[in-house]
Amino acid sequence: MARAQLAIQPSVATIAPQLDLNAQLAKIAQVEELFRTAFIPTDRASEYFKWLDELRLIKQCGRVIGPRDVGKSRASFQYRQEDRKQVSYAKGWSASSSKRLFSQILKDIKHAAITGKREDLRPRLAGSLELFGIEMVIIDNAENLQREALLDLKQLFEECNVPIVLVGGQELDDILCGVDLLTSFPTLYEFERLEYEDFKKTLLTIELDILDLPEVSNLAEGSIFELLAQNTGARIGVLVKILTKAVLHSLNNGSSKLELSVLEKVANRYGRKYTPPESSKKNK
Image (cartoon, rainbow, N blue to C red; front, side, top):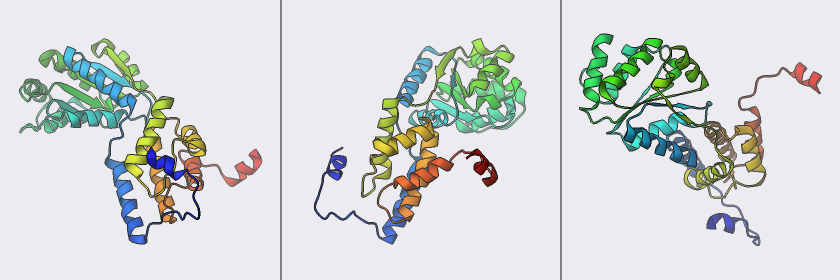
């Protein structure tokens, strides 16, 4: 915060710091890599981690429901990374069968035998989870699972008593209701968009820990904050995508901070449906 206060104090004949070409290219690569790999902590994620801890303790299954791009997947994977010896994480791909899903989990826990018939994989996995010290299984994109896979997950929990958490969108609840499995994953966590204060704190974290540019961009203040709040809907996934592109373009322009004009162009085009020029003129 001290840096930000110094940056807005009036000065005499101050010249903004500039990056030479090599430093500029290095910074672009660094920012891009950090946005791609770094986990950005939020109050929402911390609350989610506590909820997962509770399920592990009481050995109950649950489900995590929320809209796209709010950070469900990234937070779930981070939880697994922090407790990698106790938590298994797998993703449901399009129309995932029990066989494919259980092979993924066996591979994730580093079992030596990850292939086989469906009727062999479930008992193998059930006998391995406790043996391998696994305390929870998180299944992301769970709405992609076939009916048989959901039924087999219920059976898996009954056999080994290791909590299973399903992560997905609202359609996941509809699917579970359709196969009468909602009460098999009874505990619900609603993973929603960031609250106002959490959004501001997240922007400060990004500015200081991810960007770390020669000049402050004041992401959590004024026009930039309003623009980001409006165009991202406080969804961290959208925020990261917009900022990544806007920062890279700003640095390519030779700037040492995020330029508002660049951000406006990127944000106003992100996720917008194409409108032919003729339609735009008619609307005017």
